[in-house]
Image (cartoon, rainbow, N blue to C red; front, side, top):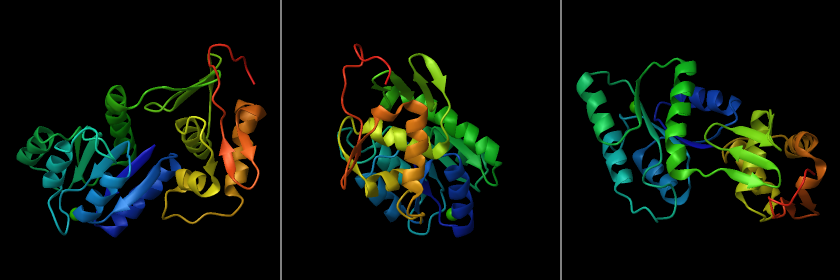
Length: 234
Ligand code: CA
């Protein structure tokens, strides 16, 4: 799950980003409206958490602009779920936020559990719009709820394993190099230990079966396209 966090307060931004990352989300940060717009224009996010009081623009204007984007444009879709997280608690602000197209409106300070729960709801709602089920061999992944089954049996993945599998399944047979997978794991602005990817891959392969993820030596990793109907377990 890729989340854009639009927030100019560094402390709040870093606290929320850390929280979301422990949940296995890939988080990018934008501190201004311009940065948020640039991120939306180039990158496909599953959800945005949007502050209203930004240094260069009002979050509400940004949201209106997003909703007016043409559906086929590159980057994030105009109907991407957006959750407003603002210090403005007046009824009028909340009503107007929802009227302008926010999926939810939360007032700061927010309890982490509540934010996560509201995000899940917004993602479920968004799932019908933008996120199809991902299928590969006998694996079925539901991005909105992060539920994974193999041959009908539910499988539990840890956050990073999930992020890795989601990236590989989304690539539909394409080889992803280490940098791409590391970005899926951590976002671009996170540092990581050099062997972390190998460790998570190892655990993931143990859970879903060694043969489903192929290694292209010196290049990267991929999940070969298969006929899901005729493929039995790995
Ligand atoms: Ca602010």
